[in-house]
Amino acid sequence: MLHGKNLIDGRWTGSNETVASADLGGFAFAQASTDQINEACTAALAAFRPFSRTTRPERASFLKTIANEIDALGDEITKTGVRETGLPEARFAGERGRTTAQLRMFAELISNDDFLDIRIEKELPDRQPLPRPDLRLTHRAIGPVAVFGASNFPLAFSTSGGDTASALAAGCPVIVKGHGAHAGVAELVAQAIATAVKTCGLPAATFQFLQGAGPRVGIELVQNPEIRAVGFTGSLKAGRALYDLCHSRPQPIPFYGELGSVNPVFCLPDAMAARAAEIGTGWAGSLTMGAGQFCTNPGVLIAVKNPAFSALQSAAAKTLEATAEQTMLTEAIGAAYHHGVAGFAGQMDAVTGPATIPDSGDTRQANPAAFRIDAASWMANPALQHEVFGAVGVFVECDDTRQMLDVANALEGQLTVTLQLDEGDRDLAAQLLPVLEEKAGRLLCNGFPTGVEVSAAMMHGGPYPASTDIRATSVGTLAIVRWLRPVSYQNFPRSLLPAELAG
Image 1: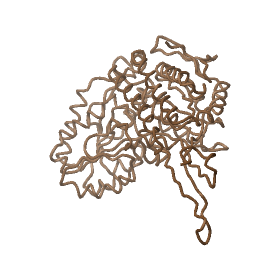
Image 2: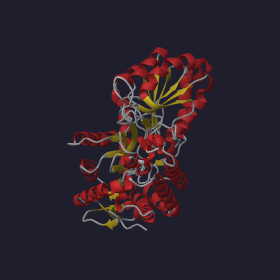
Image 3: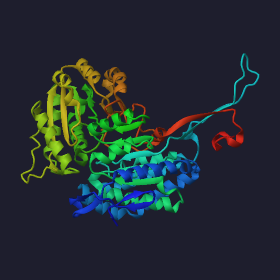
Image 4: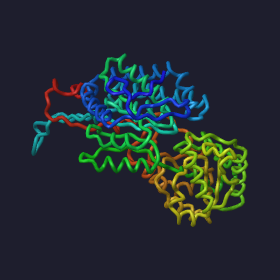
């Protein structure tokens, strides 16, 4: 049951400032005050040493308990989430399964010490000209972590998402700033984690939860000196503002932000000649999935201008025009989508009818849209590479394959780049790959990028502006590295070494 309060050091507390949720019948959520933020950060630091020194089996049990508690609240989470976001029940059920699987994946990861990247070099007292000391390296938790919930994934990238799961697995206390787009779901999941904290006998401030519909709470949170790292999924504008704050602190801290990507698809000549309609239909289906509100939405398709490309565009347009009106996550996101589409309409040719605001005037409702532009014009206007969050796509028409390579070189950093190719396209693909490897964190051969497998081999990140750290992923087991730092021990007695180094 919702109570609309913040979780601070094991206590649910209200505040003088509240924000009402129209989606939940006006239910009011307390917004964290400055004093509450400071209290939470102080408590998180106090919890850090005891929590970071729990055993790996203890933390694994904790993660599994969180997953079990979320499963137990499944129906309530789904009903609340559908009201808040407009997403269908099936989407919530699937995302809940992904979220709990992610928690259990990190529990399995820390069941052994491989993730610590242990390195042991025993002493060489007789080495000449100088002896070598005994050196042993492991990785330790970085400290309290602030996590920002994402608008488009109320579960998998929010309160109990990959940032939270990986940070807790590493031994870092977590303070989550809930997202206003799904304040109810965020609180329910926070309740599940709080129950798990009590069940497992962990420090109360191992996990804390703050609501904050505007920028103030987030700004104060990342500036608090007790926070040692930040995980964020959201817009380029908000993410860059928080990144700058993190790096301007007296003690700068890492900011791991997943920000914006248009996830270009390169359709190579033989593939397009053989299956233009199939690719166009598949691209349109990927573009409109979840009303286009995915980080990996394929917003740009690049190919050489010819009749086959025209056929591809026609097939895509047919699918887009047959797609029913979709509900955006919030009115603000819907309004931003319509604004972005209007901006595209003034600079490119429409392939489908304009994505006008419905007659009802409800900006939360949206239709997909697609535009075309020649490659030279697209490259000359970097603003056209910026993500418009929603189901809008751009066809970039190249004069020849050489210009396709120019487009590849002009790309900003991306989460994904896809190559649609057949056997005869191998030579061109080999020319593109060295460029595209520099541009994206994940490269796909055929298929479409919407959907991210949660696994050890997944990379969900990329060069700026896709993310703020080219080395980091927010999905997959490698995500835990963000919350660890290397520590080397020289000539220590075995009794004082961390357990994993004492052997």
